[in-house]
Image (tube, rainbow, N blue to C red; front, side, top):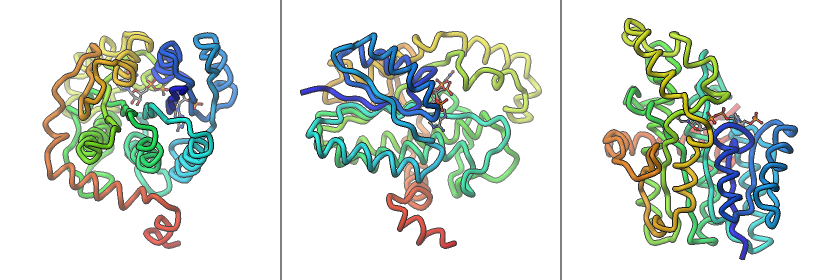
Length: 304
Ligand SMILES: NC(=O)c1ccc[n+]([C@@H]2O[C@H](COP(=O)([O-])OP(=O)(O)OC[C@H]3O[C@@H](n4cnc5c(N)ncnc54)[C@H](OP(=O)(O)O)[C@@H]3O)[C@@H](O)[C@H]2O)c1
């Protein structure tokens, strides 16, 4: 039986390197992105890595929850029809917006870094369970350490600081990841987080040298912070993909769940905030409210 993997934002940066690693490990890989030319180039590289199991590109803007629902529907229907297991889902999509973005009335970094991967995962759970043993890998970040730990609403009160808002969305996603691992105990679906450390990619290019992304307190020590950012993003995307590839494929992790694979590609202790029951409950409530599984639910919850 062919092992299959889906890598979101898999046509560039860390996601493409993750897709190449999975192809080298024998997976038939589907990469998701927005740009078809970039997708075609990614598939060429994946096919060179694993000619026996060609890769493919599916277009979706993962900032759109409607497109996430449509993508999940396509993938679920295909696996149901072919009987092939969905062995690995790598939720690699992420974004840090220097200026605040509004996406369908919601703050953009929370949508892209948490609600989108949450929704895709929830909608694919029946497929992942049918294909078990299977793994979900959610890509996290050290930025969870600077997150405001207030989850009463999608967006915390106060000014917008991209790095901290990004970290908060990643913290929400990490709390969801560890909560989901508990929920799925005994199903054969393992749920892991992978921290790439840092790499020079489209996402970090230009953003990490802009003091506007951090809070006024950190701006006071900006030269220090900037040096730290430059150092932290100096690795290649291939190096930064190792934690995701390990989380998705390492046989030593078979049957293990609820782990965070750190930037050295070994398990690390998760941030304590991610297992704080108050945060876990609040994130679950926000996710269910703002990323309902069906559009009917979405329309009922947001009439007009
Ligand atoms: N780079 C770092 O230092 C770092 C550090 C910690 C964590 N991370 C995390 O690692 C993951 C990958 O980061 P990266 O730096 O490789 O990011 P990136 O450079 O922005 O990744 C580029 C890829 O993302 C796709 N993409 C971007 N927005 C998309 C959207 N709305 N819908 C679909 N595809 C989208 C692009 O495809 P298209 O151009 O076709 O849309 C392309 O395939 C993210 O979760 C990020 O938060 C990165």
